[in-house]
Amino acid sequence: MRFPLLLLTVAIGLGPSLTFAQNLSALGTVPDWSRVSAYANTITREAFLEEMREVYSIGDAYQRQFKVNEASVRIRTGDDAWMELAFRQAGEQGQAPKRYWRPRAEIIADRTADRPLGGLRIALDPGHLGGKWARMEERWYVMDDGGKAVTEGDMTLLVAQLLAPRLTALGATVLPVRGTTKPTTSRRPKDFLALAKEDLAVMGLTEPEKTYAPEAPPAERRKTLQWHQERYFYRLSEIRARARKVNQQLKPDVVLCLHFNAEAWGDPSEPAFVPRNHLHFLINGAYNMAEMAREDERHQLLMRLLQGTHAEERALAKVMATHMARVTQLPAYHYTTNNVKRPLKNPYIYARNLLANRLFECPVLYFEPYVMNCEDVYERVQAGLYEGKRLVHGLERPSIFHEYAEGVVKGLVAYYGPEGDSQTP
Ligand SMILES: [Zn+2]
Image (tube, rainbow, N blue to C red; front, side, top):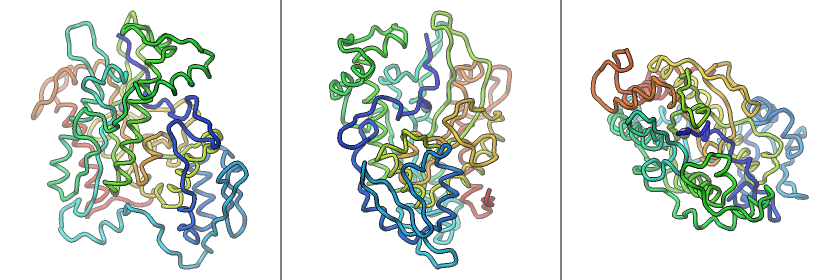
């Protein structure tokens, strides 16, 4: 059975987007530009340019949308519409940017109980859905050796369920983005027929097949209405629903997006394991020209930049990478595509513009440990959840789920705890 390649990292914005009067991303809504005014005099010109160049913009992509002057930046808010935001003058006392989340320094300053994660409001977002949706969302495979199916959405949920009581015991307030395999979005594939038709028409398919056979190869699936309708449901609509929950209800200090990685499965008729296993983390950044040109994406980028989100993401990512690498013993994954940036020298950390890390209006750390379709991880998933250590695939070790959770806990305690090895990277 074929395992879909790196599906989670397929850039969301690449699909044909809905273009009404505004240039918006798929299922995107017109942003409220008046919110930006609250950030006047909060960031210096130097800081604005440095973040734009080092973190957010691929090359000069920002220059069509942001005109940086001496005392202010002009921001494109529509085809022919601009707004102006005043920079804080260097040396001038600025006000703190408006945001619902708090950086580490504020959490520690407000801490009353002496528990390592006291005061931290942490949202856990187990990637994908799993359960009966696993096959549809293409984060699923099964070997023909009678073993259990490997389903990412169930595995990430299990890790989150192991983490929650441990983090609570350490003083954190744990806010699950989902606690079951039930979708957060109320919409379903049937709600996206018109959009699927539009997308296929853009591809030149005006009379597409309605459905695909379960064993149809990916290239065939992608020509059907069913595949496009499902994608709108399980990815775009689901992630947007989670973002509304995070931004409007949970308002956490940080979101951990928990995933397992996967590599291309090769020839579907002759499935074979890949020989590699690795770890990396994603933080938000690396917007290309087309992404910056979309009004909602540009607004989301700006909110992150003006709220100082990157400083917090990079500091947490750096500490977490050290501890996860130590616990999992996994080497760093190396991107070979040009849709990422490396704002840190750390080999485990990349910046990418993903739907989830863009929409959540707070620091987000995206975990990508373990390649699910390598033999070692397969054997560990087959061994399941167990306490203590066992001999699995030739090594005496804890269950992969406990190991994952252990790395996360160690990283969080190191970053938010009293010892705080959070030196500026
Ligand atoms: Zn994933």
